[in-house]
Image 1: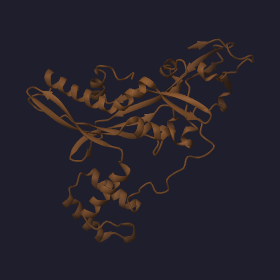
Image 2: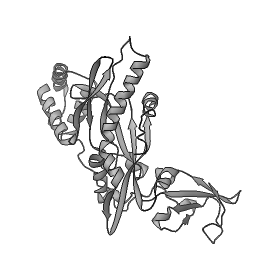
Image 3: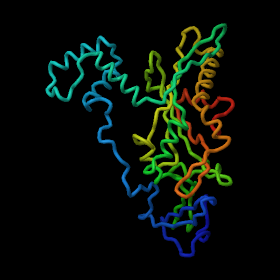
Image 4: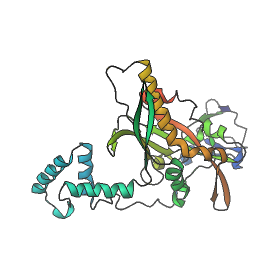
Length: 330
């Protein structure tokens, strides 16, 4: 959008000045900043607490790195035991390496799942194909309860939460006019257009990546990551509360040399995607209709989930855009 220089301010702007036009429902007047003073991604004066031992419940960081390596290598229990035996012969710091055998590693992974992967639900999804019912395992956590609420309940994270959409402009000295630019989700049109009356969007960004194949139980799937579009990029792409979180492992449809490429098999894979993805979004359905009241200090906010961005590799994107009914606008 291009706007005349006299729409909001009385003083003549200088080249590269930045103007922020806030959403009308925010009741905030427009602000103008000199370019060197502009900070699109402001940070809180109070630093976000950092976990000094993020490797827990593993006993040491070295334990975690070693276990992660073996997991990435898809070693079985016997191979793990052999590798640990070899490492024990050359380890220089016995106090930092506490695994004794493969069972010890297995127990520690179980403890990690019990403590860090809490909130995941595993279910089966049946999809008909020809004359058979094919069963797929789906692991997921409710997005609102498992991802959104922890953010809303974290007072430090919420200091950087953007409640209202904004429009950002830069003054072009040569053309003597304001020119709009977009550098964060809340500066684009989707969030702005979504806000009617007093509703506030909780902007969700979902990312699916088939290249990051993972295991859950005896099944395999590729993870779906959730990010909050109301938070600055360094927070939403970081770790811990406010950062990206795995909310599901979508099942893999095994390829069949005799079926691959056939219309029926292609449609079958789409149905698998549709049914499993709808299950992931299911807990948002009621909140999308009624909203969620959240008390922010003395202000009562009326929040609604908005699936702002769906990011995926080509194959996943090709399947997702054919979902009906469309889940991009919950």
